[in-house]
Image (cartoon, rainbow, N blue to C red):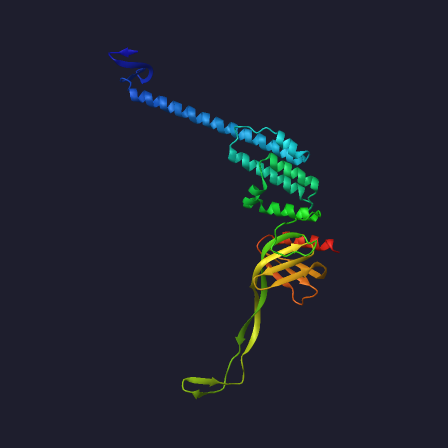
Amino acid sequence: MYFCGTRILFGAAVGGFAVHGPRRADGGTRMIFLRKFREGRAAAQRQRDLAAKTLAQYHDALTKIVESREDVGAALAALPIPTSIDPVDLKRVNELAFRRLAESFVVDDLLTETEETALLAASAALGIDDARMRARAGFADILDDLLIARVNDGRLPELEDSPLVRKRNEVVHATMGARLLKEVVLREYRGAYSGFSFRVMKGVRYHTGGTRGHSVVVGSRMEVSDDGVLVLTSQRAVFLGSKRSLEFAYPKLLDIHVYSDGIRLAVSNRQTPSVFELDGNSDVIAAILNAAAARLQ
């Protein structure tokens, strides 16, 4: 209701009326803007909720297929990928599913040909290739586990290129950067002197006394004595260094000791074991070395 250009509303606290001046145009525009902003924000939230729900459903479907381990490659290839899933999220859940499948295959430390074929089919369906896995630090451990499990199944890798001059019918299984280490004994001088001193020449004193100092061993440390590459073949392990080369024929191999970052090899024709610091996973080298040597027994 308007009276003399002034808007009058019923229901006000004073006298049952509320009096307002003329409505400003900018206030109405602001109200429209706020309403549209709230509507847009609510729509965006609904979109995010829908995407999260779709992603969760896709993840559950992946998990069910992986856990069943039945015709995994075909099942994954047939699984529809919703277009509403963000590519980053899709990549993440696919990689997680592949890792879970790979871990289930190597839980017994063996990777059979059938399991490897299924794993390759799954990686293709999920869009994960070998180069992509090797480029991601999070896959390094599972790739090493797969290789070790494959070696334990009796299937050793075979390399075409190698710095080693091969013998007749010799197959190269692995190469890895390595450093030959040597143990250096740490000594220190301990003792005391007492008695008298006399001048031998100007400015120099000769000390003598009842107790002479002596050198004692206080520990040791490993130092790099040579740098090169360790090559594992079907017949031997060979270290090709910049200063020298060492050969470890498998029939003469007595002991393999594995460290977190290296390996120690002892052979019957060499008195002192050789210790190597490795650039890669020492467990992989030990597994290949053990499998290759066992074939000659």
